[in-house]
Length: 427
Image: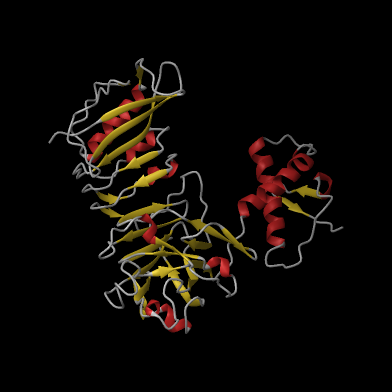
């Protein structure tokens, strides 16, 4: 099969005619990526970008098939790979872990292939800004916490304004979720994402069909959270990643802002779908307008003690074929969600490491430098950390925090084995 492969070079001021080479380490990474994907028709002997399209194999162009590697040429003699688009290539390999070796890569599109396996953890340290993977691939996206290996941050809450912009209500900030939808869409952010599948019947659906806006003035509390919502004709799934394991409370906000309840044809529509959390059916045949007793009214479904075991929560809305599909118009049925809130039922643990070293920073000069004994640095560090841990231990589970002052070498003594015990004076 003839495959189009275009290697385009964009200079700082446009496309330049002169040849610019790709660094050898990036070419080696591209070779590894080809092997991992099962991409066999790249000519890896062509290690430069120019306007003559050296990696070009003509085919009849269609929107479904695309084989493109883009370069960013910011220097006078060197280019860096910035995008890999391999759409509809019938690739049957795995997601390439070697893209981590392309430090300038920002875009990757591997949709409409037959790839398998999980998201490589190495992707956490990339600079990717856009990623498209689904449409036919057999990927395992559950439980993947794309946190860089040098970071151990986990999340204890998640608030998403589905289909709307960033909104603050009280002390809670709701994350924007304005990405365009489609028949098969996967969007991923830092610690959350969503996937949407399905075609709306009897309409030539555009991206605008997957986000809806209110058609009348809303008067409920916090109405700014309900002026938009995300829709799906079949299945809509939100993922929260990198959550600390434990029990959570999930609150789902709904408002029927499409159908009307006046005495007209616009009031005949019925939206019915199922709600799943962690693959468990929590509400069957949910009808927003019926539960709210009218349209443009908020409904909050709260589910307590939702267990997170693998640092991931999955919330899915599924249309099971019930309700109307063409009344009052075609293409406005299926699940609709306004806001998703996830809150831990437990307090986040204190950052003990941060507390210890904040104290050590204050004590190191006062204690270690005043000490008259000849101590090596590991011993001095052990002494400082011992004091810090002692302070942290004394302050555990106390609502009233005491500020310790005058902590210095003259207020402490060393035992024979250089174990320091602190006599604390309070001021």
